[in-house]
Image 1 (cartoon, helix red, strand yellow):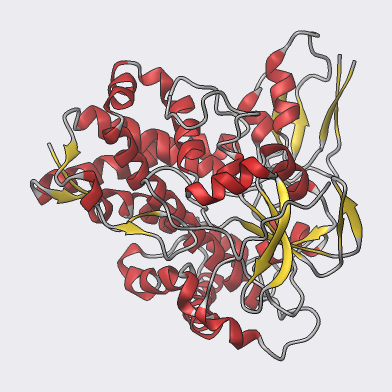
Image 2 (cartoon, rainbow over the protein chains, first blue to last red):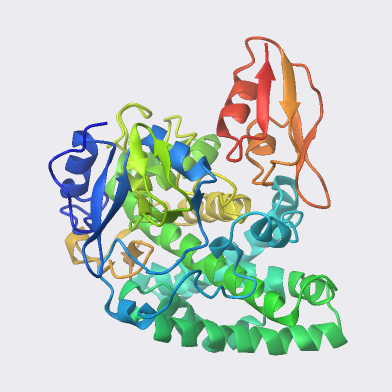
Length: 406
Length: 63
């Protein structure tokens, strides 16, 4: 493939509208689905993939690695990148953090959890999730008009669910919620992120030790009792589940609600035809694609990919948000339409790293949106949409607050 | 057509069991694919979707 003229510096992040990817990123996608891109901090060249077909292909290709080696390059400007300077070879891997690993290390740890997150097991949780959703809808109503949907509903629902599944007391959320936000803040710097991770890990290691002595019926007890896992691995896996398990779904619940309120016909459709909810959730996942900084991999060897010569050590950023707006894969991709067939969206990724908790996220979102619409059919924004504060400095895009009334 | 599942490649994402529960289930222990039937009608779009959506390339159809 002939390289296009433009070599952008990093992945464009500045949006013109609330729900659409940046126009600059869409323009790059229309020009070429695979191109050179310059990376921070020093402008070194790597790759950017934007189409649905190539995103799928790249994420399924084992020659693109998740275990990164120095020197570290990133597709977004971050202040702490110099913390990695001086490192050589493979970067130190956080014990238990299997998203940073490749097979067979990744496989060994992921398989410890996959039996828990099956479609069937997650459906069995539905009645309990419904109770949690109902209790947060009571809290929303009790907060009075106007209320912040993020604080009363979107954040507590997935936090309560993952805490209960893991066996972490929700009352202790002060010990992990602020640190979890730091881990996902792009500009936080490697040292600060490391400290935040360690702090959550320390809390969960303490809890795991207690459960080792006195097991309960929860996931952390099961992990703690597993002789094949080290204590550090148990803590690392628990951190991953805890933070990935609520930041993501929380962002989707709030931004999804805003998208339905701003596309009122879609809200009304889901209210009149609740059977559309399963497909509606897939469409919201596709349309909103909250992972706006892309998925990052690194070439483990020299190879040819779609006519391009990829060199060992080069980074590739897979832009799932443009892939999910790809006209070659989705009909009328820039319109939110809950009746659309959105199957095949890449919001949960693709390849062996595809989201472990996706079936839990689906059950949470279906239940939460359905009950929210049923209980507050007249819900509306309490401020003009342009005044809703957006979160743009984290790896997941979303709203910081969502003032609503009814 | 015949459905072929490679449990060695399976990443237990559950896309097959979600998309086509008539043909696919997940192992209780590790979530890996379990075939409930290894034959499907030629025009069965659910089974085709399930195979297409598999993230790890563990499924294929032999026509």
